[in-house]
Image 1 (cartoon, rainbow, N blue to C red):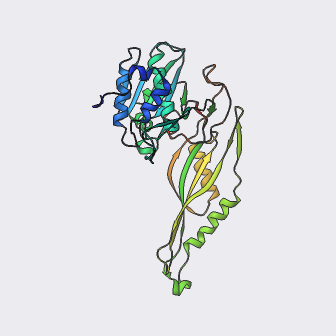
Image 2 (image 1 turned 45 degrees about the vertical axis):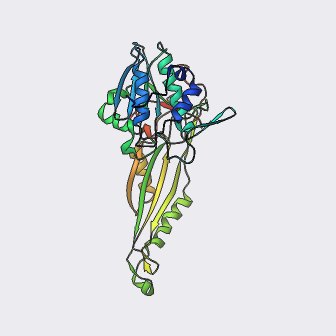
Image 3 (image 1 turned 90 degrees about the vertical axis):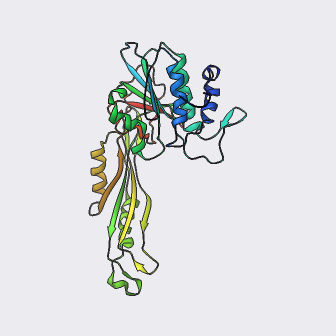
Length: 323
């Protein structure tokens, strides 16, 4: 339980706007979520209709009413680093501060529902998880998927990020990989003795420039793929022909492609080059026909990659809220 007085008082919990501001005013930069997780856990445990579990700084609460279907409402507790935007401020009818949109407003919505709706139409599992904004090895849902996969059982999942009010169905998969070119190091005064790996990377960039991404329609949702260079690393010194160049690429794939399919496609595009996969997460089908009736009110494909989609609800359709 939190050492400080919990700012998530009953009055605050009853007002999603006040709750959003209170959550924003609890600093929770990635890997420093203990304080906010303590506060969230305390208010959830005060609700007798919920079963509450915690793993690290990820808090799960669920109803067990024997409903025919179960829906997950998920939100991450962490934020990006502060940037002169803490604590929250209010200007007119807008709240400004670190995490307001990404995604403490969504967390406030789920937390408010968890405490104030004891008899939902569907059984509901609420996830408030850590470390979404950093490397996937720290991601709270990935950690839960490995340690307690049964916690993730559901028919449908919704990521409440942020609160624009439009459901966006499914998500793209993502893969980051290094495409390497090799050469032979030499002094630039004797450049003919070397092979310039940076020059060789020109072919990688040429293929990217010529690449024509797919546009895929699934359940009436349009997914536009993308394959792009996001970083280039190369060079030894100002007078040395480089023997290595690395082009980091990011492939966003439509959810009709598995991780294996995505990797096979990347290898096909960069045939002849050394490829190292840095990280990968599958997409998720929109599953609008499988969704609990009435859960979706607008068909709109979600393009950003929610990192929680990795090894967690890969078998379940899910949605997010539009930015």
